[in-house]
Length: 100
Image (cartoon, rainbow, N blue to C red; front, side):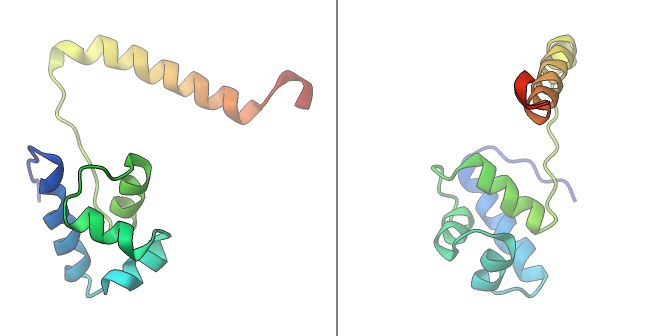
C-alpha cells in the first residue's frame, strides 16, 4: 500500500496502524526496536521533533519502507550526491590512514 504524506504528523497514524496490525504493544515494540516507549509515543502522535535516525529505526523495525518520488530533473544531482555519500561511507569504514 502506498500512502502519501504531506506533513510530519501524518506518519504517526501509519506507525501506529503498522504496530497494531502486528498485534504488538507499544512498549514491546519500543523494546524490540531499541527505542524508549516515550519516543515510540512521540512517533505515533506525530511529534515533528523526533530524531530522523531513530524514526527510521522504528520504521524499519515495523517493516515500513520509505520511498521518495523525486522529480526527474533532480536525477543528475541526486546521483552525484549518492556517489559522494557512498565515498564518505567507504572512508568511514576504512578509518584513518594510520589504522591500516
